[in-house]
Amino acid sequence: MQRETDEFRDIVDGEWAGGHIAGRRPTGEELTRALQVMITRQCVYSHTPGIGRTYDMVRAYPTFFERYFGSLGYRLVISPRDQMVALSVPADEARYDGVFERLRKDETLVLLALRLLWEESLRAHEVGEAGIVDTTTDDLVDRLVTVTQSPPPEETRLLDILRMFARHGALRLGERDRVRRVSTLAILPGIAILVPDSYVRDLLLWAVEPAASGEALSEPEASEAPEAAKAANMASADTAGLAANTNEKEGESDV
Image (cartoon, rainbow, N blue to C red; front, side):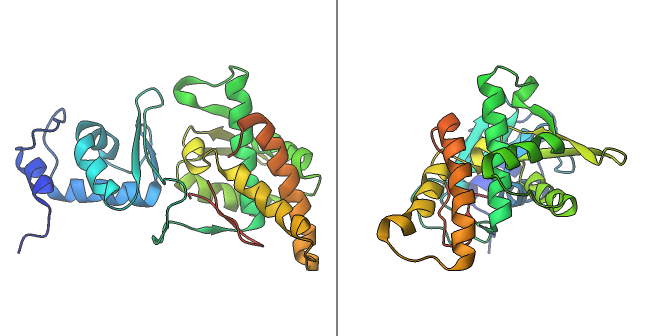
C-alpha cells in the first residue's frame, strides 16, 4: 500500500508539473522532513540552521505545500522579501493540533512586547535586511516594564521564554554579555505570523470582560488583568490589534 500522496510521489519521481527545484530533486526522506519541519517550526527562513533544504523545497513546490497544509487548516505564507515561509492559522477556526500551545501570562506579555518592538521599528523605518529588527534583552525588558508597569520576568526565565519563541521563528537570540547581563536579540518577521492582528483585540476583550459583566475577580485574576490590559492598549495603539483566544489565566497564540 502506498503511504504517500500521488503529489508527493510525483515530486520525488521528478514528474511534478507544479514546480521545479534547482539541483537534484528531493528524496522522499527530504520531503517528509520538510513537512515535519514546517509543522514544528511554523516560521522558516533561508538562513534557519539545521533544516536542510526545507525553505528551498517550499519555494519550489508551493502548490503541493499549500494543498497539504490547507487540508490541515493552515495557510501557507511565502514572503520572498523576508526570505520566509510560514504557516498561518486562519482566525476564528477550531484548533485540534498539538502545536497550538497555551501560553502563560509572562509568555503572553513577552510575545506582545516582541511584536510591539518589531512594529515600532517598522513604522520608524528602522527594520534591517529581510525584515529583521536588531535589539537587546535590555530594550525588551524596558518595553515590558513601560507597558505593564510591573517587574519583568527574571533573567533566566526570560531567556527560557525567548528560546521557546526562537524555535518557532519569532526571533534569533544572540550572545550574552556576562558583565552587562544582556543578550543581543534579532526579532524576525515571523513575529507577525505568530502574533496576528487580532491578538491584542482578543486580549483586550479578556481584560475588560469581567469588569463589564460586574463579576468579581479572584485575587490572581485581579492582579493579572490590569497588566494584560496595559500591554494590550499600548500594542493596540501601534498595531491595530495583535490572533489569540484567551482564557482567564492563560493566553493562547498561534505558537
